[in-house]
Length: 220
View 1 (cartoon, one colour):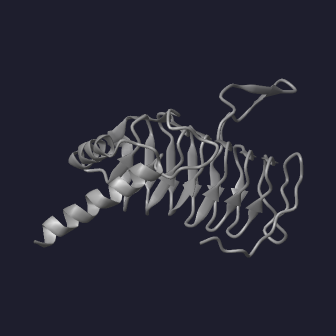
View 2 (cartoon, helix red, strand yellow):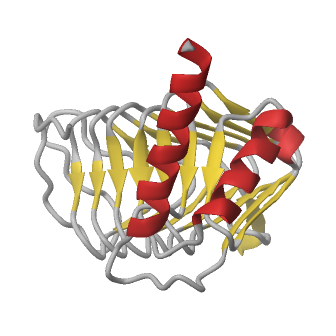
């Protein structure tokens, strides 16, 4: 009886999520069961594509495209291309229309939280995101230049790890580039371009444009 009740509750929750996201719930249920058969606690909308599912590690659960936001549409496609390693340590939600490209040799790790769509994440080196961190609409997080940059005849490194702490809020349209460290409790202003580490004390963005952010706020 306990298993039956759990199953009924699970289906009811999927029906509610599907209705809110304007999805056909049997399709969401079937996709969820297929992911569970592969050992992954993933629930996703119908137009989600995951390539490299074996490289995705889900600690608690992963929800993709089932939280409606006004800047997305039911036909938006969410794409996870995982040739490296993608880890979700706690419950995580990915907004509809996001693009994750974890290239071969890259490692991306997320604590509990969510990212709004349509955000792009490109990892060739390493990305670590803490618990309770929120990533706003249409952001770009890239730990690589994707090509060589030559300065005064010398090539600069093409990639460097990104570290984002706990309870960080990254505002809509922000761009976070290689080598950046954002301490816990910071807020990145909407439209900011972050190119180097935050100051630990005052949390000023060292990139361009430089925008003052707040620290010490917890986002639940």
